[in-house]
Amino acid sequence: MSDNNVSVAPVSGKRDFNAFVDLKYRLNEDDPNFVPQLRMEEVELLTPGKNPFFDHARHQFFLARRGDRVVGRISAHIDELALTQPADKGFGPGCGQWGLLEAEDQETASALIAVAEGWLRDQGMTRVLAPISMSIWEEPGLLVKGYDHPPTVMMGHQKPEYRGWIEGAGYEPVKSLLTYELDITKEFPPIVQRIVAAGEKNPRINIRPVEIKHFAREAAIVIEILNDAWSDNWGFVPFTAREAEYGGKKMTPLIREDLNMIAELDGEPVAFMLTWSNANEPIKAIGGKLFPFGWLKMLLWLRNPQCNTMRVPLMGVKKKFHNSRLASQLAFMMIEYIRRNSVKSYGATRGEIGWILDDNHGMVAIADAIDSKVNKEYLIYQKAL
Image (cartoon, rainbow, N blue to C red):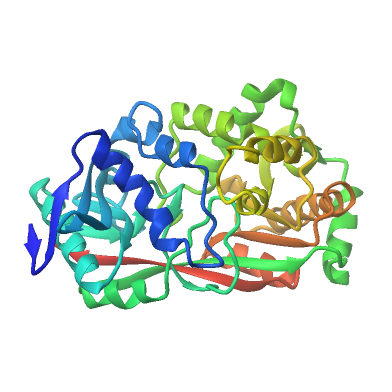
C-alpha cells in the first residue's frame, strides 16, 4: 500500500526483519526516558519458534518506507486463544490486534494502521484491540501518563504524539491500565500493619518464599493460581504450559526467593506475589548493548541486583477468596514481607505495582491502602473493522 510518499509492505527476509527490529532504537534514541532493551531479547520476542506466543497466534509484520528509508513499522496479529474468550471480557470471536507501532510522523502511522486493519479484515476479523505488543502478558497499551520517567522492566514507553495519531485513526479507549508507585522505605499505615500482625498470629496462614530448587513445582503453583484468579478479568488469556516454562526460564536471572512469595491457607497454596529487581536500570546504563563491556556489567549486577526500584508485575488470590477480608490480608502480608526484604537486601527505595486494570476495585483498594500513587497510565483502544 502507498499513502502519498509512504509505502507499506510486509516484512520479507532477514534484511527487512533486522530493519524492523532496529527502527525502534533509532526513532527513540533521543528520548532520555527510553530504555533500549537488549537486541537479542527483542529478536527473540519477534521470532516464531522462540516466543511461544506464536504457537497460538497468526501474525504479519509490516515496514513503512519513504523511498529507501524505513520510517515506520507495525505488527498485525491474531491470538487464537484470545478468540475463545468471552466477548464482554475484551477479546472474543473476531477480535484481532496490532502492536509494535513505531512511526516518524502521523502520515506514516496512519498508513501502517490502515494496512494492519486490512490484514486483520482479510483474516476474518471484525474488530481490533490495540496497541498490544504482542501478547496481553507482554506490553499492552499505549503510554498516556508518565512520560517523564523511564519504564520498569517489561513495561512499554511511547512518544506522547502517538495518542493523537491513534485516536485520529478512529480508535476509542476501552480500558485503562495503571501502575502505582510508592516509597518502600516507609512503613505502611497503622491499619495495614495491624492487618499484617493479625495474619501472623493466625496458625492457618503461612507466607513462604518460593524455592528455586523446586522451580517446576513453584511455577506450576503460580500459573494455576494466576489462571484461576485472573479468569474473570477483562483481557484475560490463559497462560499455556509452554509459555509458563518459557517465561520462567527468561525471568530466572531476576528471581530471588525472598522477593517472591506464596501464601498458603491450611497448607493449600491460595495466593502469590512476584517481584523483580528493575533490570531496566542496568540495561539503560549500558545503553542496551552487551558489547564490548556491557555483558560484564550485567553479569555483575545479576549476581547482586542492587537497584532503586522493585516491580510487582503479577499477584493473584484464588477466585473463591475474592472480595473477602482474607484476600486483602494475604496481599498485605506478602507486600510487607517483600517490602522489608527489598530495602534490607537490595537497597531499593521505590516500589512499582502493576499494571492494574482501572476497574479492578480490589487491587486499586490495596494500592490506595499502602499510600501508593498512580505514576503511569496505559490505554488500550478498540475499533470496529
